[in-house]
Length: 347
Image 1 (cartoon, rainbow, N blue to C red):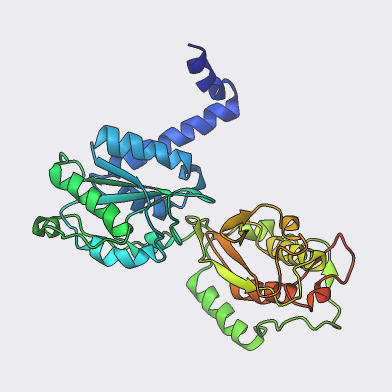
Image 2 (image 1 turned 45 degrees about the vertical axis):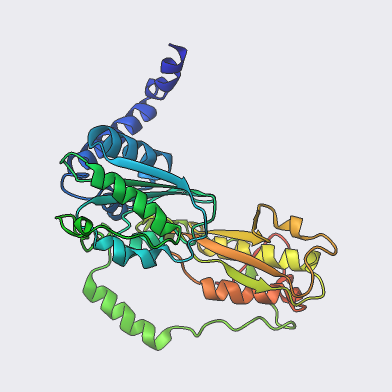
């Protein structure tokens, strides 16, 4: 009884009640199309709604695919790394006998959902890591799922793990073809003529990519760049993560100066792109605090530190990598100039 009351506490406020009503309206609209008319993962991908991601998408998978449509489900902790999951999409696209949905529990981004027949959606999984949970849902839309659906889900897991199982011929005969995805333009999208004019103007005035900062060059420093308004104008799509990029330490040690340089570089990137997140890894372990890399004798010359960027509209990764490479070298001091509490304008 007490558990039920706790779950209903969100309805005791006006804001909580309105939020619950909006979520239910979205769910009802999705339920009308999921499975019967359209793949559930395709619907979520096109909506790009953060309120329907993570644990809330897990509830949709259970409610719509399992409870309502009785899809067959097979789960496994991956036995190997899947470096390029998008490369599996062409094979899955041939499985027209069944409708497929893949759910991957990313260790940093949380639950990610994709139609494995669409390479753009699978690409959002990034590099799938060993021992992380993968769940495959297979069914026939509004029709009853059968043994072929269970076989499809089982074979899909094997393909993700790098096996090459024999696919039965009946898997290639059906109506569940992969459809081309077309995301709706944002409400405040710039008209095509204005975009063309802006593009033509940009060709004559666009700056060249920034070169590495010279040690004796003074960096422009200012208060944090306010880009919240600009970021809110961008349509938020599904979150994805870039591949891991390696940065070799060319300084004699990755010491406190290198750490401070990296912190200022990443702060500059976050100031320009507040909707994106930079993840740092060392020896396969995610580094929650860059200061932890400052241990004499731990990160030496020749060591590799990895990073990845996560978000929906990922930009300037190459420039970020160039700055981090310089920050891991003996030229790190270029990023330490200017007032301590100010953010560098690097991007």
